[in-house]
Image 1 (tube, rainbow, N blue to C red):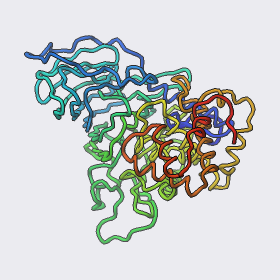
Image 2 (image 1 turned 90 degrees about the vertical axis):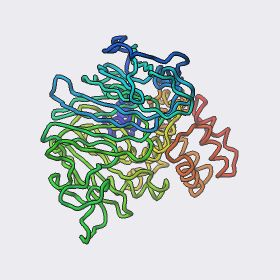
Image 3 (image 1 turned 120 degrees about the vertical axis):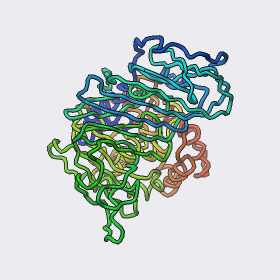
Amino acid sequence: MHTAGNSPSPRPHGSRAVRGAAGLAALAVAGSLTAACQVPLGDDDPGGPGGPPKGAATGPAGPTTAGDDYVPGDGNGGYDVQHYGLKLTITPDGPKQLDGTATITATATEQLARFNLDLTGLDVSSIEVDGAQARQQRAGSELEVTPAKTLRKGAKFTTVVKYSGTPKPVSDPVLGKYGWIRTPDGVFVACQPSGAHTWFPSNDHPSDKATFDFELTVPQGLTAIANGEPDTPPEGTGGTPGLPGTPPTGAPTTDGPGVVPVAQHGLTRRDTTTRWRVKSPMATYLATVDVGRFGVATGKTPSGIPVITAVDPTLPGVSLDQFHKLNGNITEEWSKLFGPYPFSSSGGLIDNADVGFALETQTRPVYGSFGLQPTIVAHELAHQWFGDSISVTRWQDIWLNEGFATYAEWLWDEKTGGPSVQQHFDETYEGLGASELWNVPPGNPGRKQMFGRSVYDRGGMTLVALRNRVGENTFYKILRTWTKERRHSGGTTEQFVALANRVSGKKLDAFFDDWLYQKGRPAK
């Protein structure tokens, strides 16, 4: 995340970062994104409509939390989600903005007579487990589900939740407003770390990743864009499903992303229903649905990675073509340095959303109305490797996301004529008034500082110091090995340190301890 401030590059909280002195302000904004996704317990009705099913299982229940102190209450235990199918009707100006059906396929990791999902503030009309009515109980952000029959350990089961309401954005004094955000013509959704359950029932913790399908119905004249790729070929192009912008058979191809007029790309259709598929596992907070009027560009990078880019045309000074080409160029560059691009498409979306951050929503980072800032784009796209493909299994290790994306931000600045990575390091290292940098260990910053400056800047500096310690070739070998071995899974700091030791042939435990876990300024 990156938060946008007065600097040329806003910083996301998951990827909300703005660099430099102004970048620090942006970081605060980015941090606000994360906080925004944390939702206080609500006052949901304890019982659901319709009463209990004729028979309900009795016996052991799964844990009601993932046990992560950084996001108390988030996540659940006793099962592992494989897939979310979200069928959503979104009416931005309606009395209820959202009418949804969530079909959740999971495997029980222990015997379960009941289990919990995370859901805040929406009305649940019915729940079924494996086709039979289930009982619901509500308490705060917990939706307790009691199926008709006990689920055996190892059993695959399907839960269907029908729900509706108007998701409420989260407001935080540090992170600002995030989650489900109304825009002048639609909706903007960005939910790090724990706002997914404001708009769909889920196991809302990055330790449980799943694939996603979206079926999105919106008012005529609006476009709905989500993660992944649209399931229907672009109209009038004869394209291949899942690869927007593919030219018809026999048509000449061009190198690099190309701009396709909105009327041709098939994302806005008369029936107002679009389907998107996310083929690789995704953390819940990285899911997004954006609704509005967008200019859309589709194409491929020179190496063949599909790129889908969208921009709200009412934003002044934001060029769709420039943003689209930048997404393709950065995706290509990071693929050379960090390893093969981990997903089936890349791109981004800039919306007229009154937020001061960007977020690395998987395959398609989203940006607020602060405009186009290339270093922030570099930051968010680096997260596709560090944060999205390799997710944190506990939020304490968020530097593995933000420190790596900050390093990439500095690197893109260097590659485009700005200060070098080492100059960024030296300026930050020698900077005055950096108590928040040296007094907060980025490897365990605490819940209040999980998106603070230390996680971003000291996290990035740790990687520069590592590069200086092991040499550039070994450093990038470490990064590429990390992205290869942890692709589409999770990672911890301990696992990264062990890998760095193995690849470099050096004992780096004391080095990482100084940079990540001790207070005070480490030696260069």
